[in-house]
Image 1: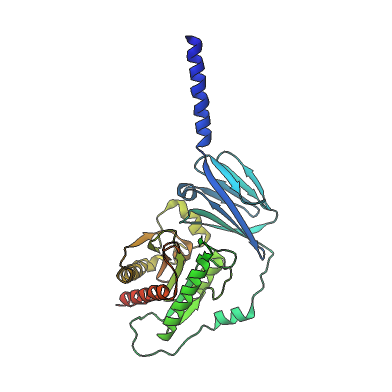
Image 2 (image 1 turned 120 degrees about the vertical axis):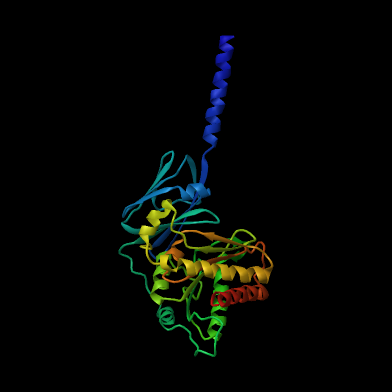
Length: 331
């Protein structure tokens, strides 16, 4: 009898150990390289992204996850990975400038690694376009009092964003940004596009560009993974994002505009709801592109191309909604 009890206990212990080993959270590592910049992306559960502790030095990244994990890589990495039960060390070959941020939908940890001695070449045509934005003379009284806009088309270049079939987030956002610029220009506004073509722009460069142009309004465009329109405004309360806030020196830029950002979100959300006859989700999140902007701002996620076909008619409805929202915000 005693031996039988021992045998049963051993079996139960074995299954408990096996079950425990299976309860590790999956973490997928992706990376890409372009012109001296390496981007490392970790896709995993939202809690693992929001609660991960990040420590960086000039040649090392340390990630401490809240629990055990299984790491999967799509291809062999050019950097050394040292994995423990709950942590991962990334050892870089050269000293670099490292910036990281957390993104939702899907939940991701993203690291941009720029070699310190790398000087990217600048295209003269693109630089001239940024310095001399398209502008039309101010016309008669406009329903939109804001005069200077920066439109940020999410992703670009090798960063495709969310994809569905042969449709990419980077293309949807660029088309919408161009269409929105065209309409605003006709209303006599000054409009800057963070990117005019299919090119990669780092997060730090986006932030610098936005504040260099000193807009009256910033609108950042993305797609969601759902069938919903989602509007994001800045948030400053989350303690786990303190390192991120310090990294981009954003503690004082957006705070005095937060009420206006909220009003802008309400107005655009109301206009979208009326145009598409659907509810609009509004959220606060400490996204760097918003928190660092010295202007009223909003990030708009349009539905996934899985649920909405982005033809000329749909794009026009979205642009009309944004314009109507800007008009409501101006009242």
